[in-house]
Image 1 (tube, rainbow, N blue to C red):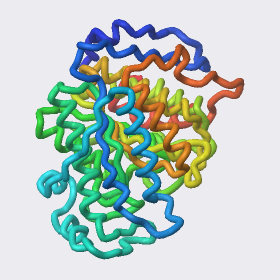
Image 2 (image 1 turned 30 degrees about the vertical axis):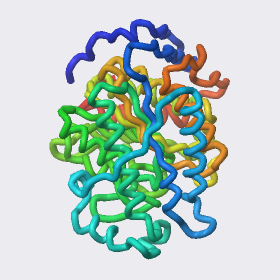
Image 3 (image 1 turned 180 degrees about the vertical axis):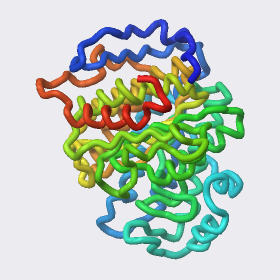
Length: 383
């Protein structure tokens, strides 16, 4: 693997503590954006139309999630930030990762409510809203790849990372982040990295790039759990061998477990891969209050993980980072996490200790995940 390039200017202004004991919290400093360095550090892409995808009463992926996203977008607008509405993704953009027949089947549900599986339902407007979510990812990628913005946050629903080339599942219809990654390749990105910290493994995203050495997929997720994929031994296939990185974590994992897997596996692999663009599938259902997940992450941990990715994007790809929302089903926790992530992406100083203070208990779940990943990935990456 190529040697990571020298730190670029912003990284030179980030005080980072390089020598720490194994169980100390990783210090992560995010510098304030300096006006004039770019037209704007962060662009937020969102639309009230995302509420028009309706689900049955009591369904966790509800239209109220769109209202929470609107609150975050409006808060960014009040700070003077730019919020824009997305365009619909085109058939050409969607069929770079999905089968054309499958896209047509979803299109034919327009105007009706159809149960595609036990969890995934269309409503009359779902097809158009799903195209809008995919289009938001495409717009975000275009704005960042053009250099107009350094980072982009696409506040979208329905989520996408479970959607496979030929089927919907897990509340997902079109794989937004995968569509964005494929679009980035057409814009000249030679290598694209996707990090996914949703509590569920992104089976669809993995499947779309499992044989592709130009796209690195990294997932940390609760395991065993839905959808059943994401074992540490799943490292990619053929030319893509080594470019799928799975960090399955036991139920009950806490902030320190995630800190360890980021510090010891995720960040080193990203630095060696040297992406031209970094994408984040930002699901917040590993939060301690989420009704679907079994993890115990605090709100602050999502800010810290995102802050780590801001730093590695600065080191590897001139800060180019696109964040696309996935899960998160406690509405208050979802909104809190989005607010904190937006603050980090805006370049605001989030404090000397980004990661919450380490507890006296060793992160045994995280350490187990690290050992497994290093063993599985030893032929492909240096640790």
